[in-house]
Length: 129
Image (cartoon, rainbow, N blue to C red; front, side, top):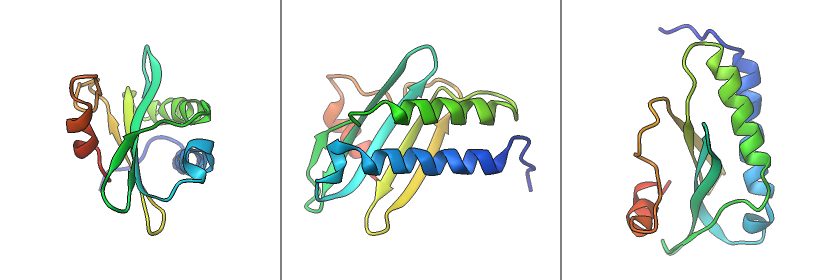
């Protein structure tokens, strides 16, 4: 078992804050969605990109209208960096029913979750919750 060397309670609260900020955002709150995938970058560039999925499996590119998600993610990266290396981007996947949140981190600054105009449809499937 690996021991956690950062403030786990604070990190858990920030993950909750990220989920709450996404769910309360005007771009999602009135929609009948079944899933949301959001990549949040907090390295040199601060940005978000992602998708919202409906019950039929259709998707649309969508990000939160509010930058609270980036602020919470940056704070989470800061807290987790106290335990060692700092992650550059995270993938937040939220699904219904629930909602259930899953969050993964990219510590290597890889291009695995980078969305470009040329790979948008492919990434919509790859990032689907």
